Length: 136
Picture (cartoon, rainbow, N blue to C red):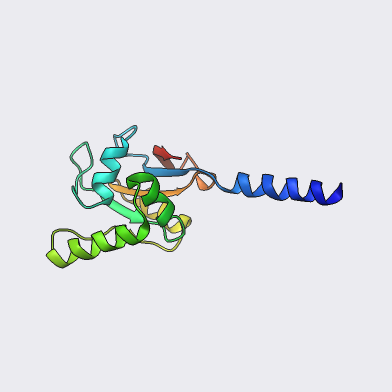
């Protein structure tokens, strides 16, 4: 009985830790939301502009990167890395800036109107950043 209870608690706690990924933006950015396609175009280097025409500064999160791109593009991180290697070699675009953690991403988004990042939904403070898209 005790082993079953411990197993149930472990499964429940690991389930709760796996939150969705939120694409976040600056509170002063006029956008209220973004589509998956718009986010994909920015993070894949196809455009450098937000839908409102302002410059976009995409930010990558090292711990969530594989999950984010899998949700966004339905491609593995290995394919994403190969894609960026080709794009960078051709000189067409630069990959998103990699920051060390959620707090660093929040800080850059808070200070830059065009910054876009993604973090675990559990890390969001909606008084500091706004949610533009949720990826499951």
